[in-house]
Image 1 (tube, helix red, strand yellow):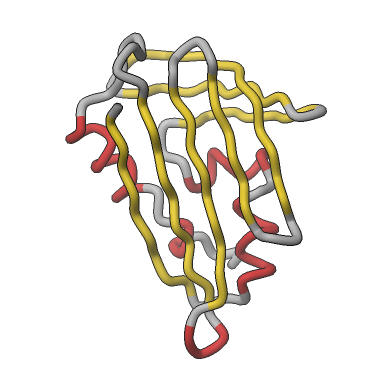
Image 2: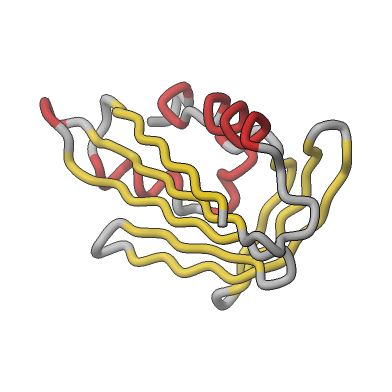
Length: 129
């Protein structure tokens, strides 16, 4: 299994950061490969372009606003992830993201592709926060 982790500090309250990142309709604003995302009753549908290839994927999503944790996964691709938002110094927030790709995952991205995507997925660049 390939696993990736990244954390970033954001100069905004943890509650406002979590409200923004856990709103699935905002995914295209901070996930560079996503063009459209919607969720309903624990299911998520995402469309986008990754490395020149169009994709559509469906999976599950769970948002725990009290703990500021979001978890998602796609059974077909063997991909899952979690995002945690916590309080950081000076009234800011820290986002920690963990991605997991099964060894059996079809068309799993390369480590370079995942790291490039994480580098580009900086929610702190979003003016709404």
